[in-house]
Image (cartoon, rainbow, N blue to C red; front, side, top):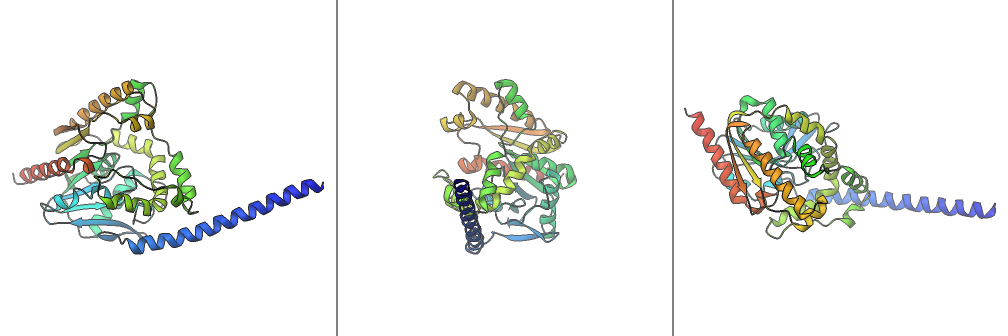
Length: 339
């Protein structure tokens, strides 16, 4: 009996100590987040979208149509377009932003929803005085979000550029070709979200971006990652719904459309992350090409351009390709509008 009481007492002391450490870590994390925001003010403005919520919106340049950049399933937000934003803004108005909960943007009202994300973006643009028509540029899963925006505000969208964008059927097609699932899990992001408030995540994460990427991308990813992870986890949980929504709204009519697709062979690290052999990686790349050929047919004026020397982040590895492509679609919409 005495030994049992000793064990229970030791466990109680351990639990109290652990709670104290967690409470201290949470307090420190709260202070660090305030310091991060003070040291790294939001580029552009924090646009009021109603409901006491704001989205970070960074618009530069002048001209029409207005290019709107939509980032992928990451925590870069507007920084995803650092390598191309200024160059595009030299020839027309160009806006990049962070979705709800990412970087400087306030959290979403509830669970992530692809149509609400489009409504939030439209509210941020219009509320900040930005004017249609729009040319949407969507990277990765941002391509799905661009389709949702086009579905809701079709009369305002004149053209699109899809940058190695997610195809609504890709995971089904990968599974069929490879006999295994490549669909990402939200589990890791959920665990990270749980740790984020305790401050422990900052001890575990140090974002390492390729040396040719803009230096501020890695620096700010590390600084803002703990606060942005819950939003990433929410988008991952909603991915199947987002895919289904895009599948129903992939027809783009006669809007000018450029599809950029990376067909660079996967690196050893990428193959390991996907649990693929070299042969399976080649099959995946072949299917990826086929999927993007289909994307180009979503518009009567679609065109596919294969990029052989860039990773999934074409805008960082080959910004010149993205800049040239965006300008091509901008000019095509101007020519169509002058007829």
